[in-house]
Length: 92
Image 1 (spheres, rainbow, N blue to C red):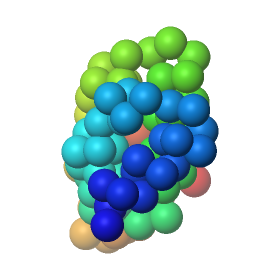
Image 2 (cartoon, rainbow, N blue to C red):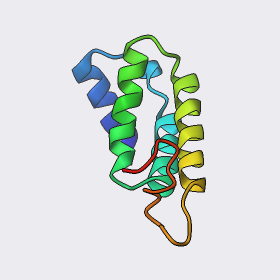
Image 3 (cartoon, rainbow, N blue to C red):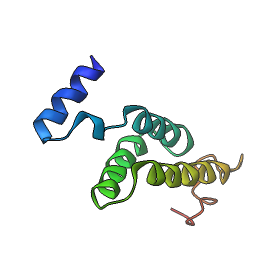
Image 4 (cartoon, helix red, strand yellow):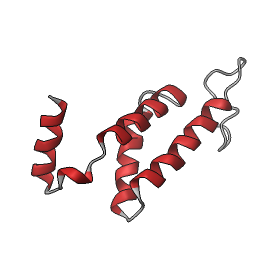
């Protein structure tokens, strides 16, 4: 079902199926959902798409985002499980 959906969306948007790395996007979404917040997953996938649309190589951009998500998760403390006080970009 997922492959059929991807193919249908690609046709609708005029994309070649080979342009879409399903596993890359799903792995990135998983890492963000677990390391940052679940709602961040679809938003991050969208941001990845914007970066790729502007010429960034998908694998490079995804790797950078994954590193950011990992450092974000590592910044959380037992006293502040939200990670807001310890996030790499400062308080939320």
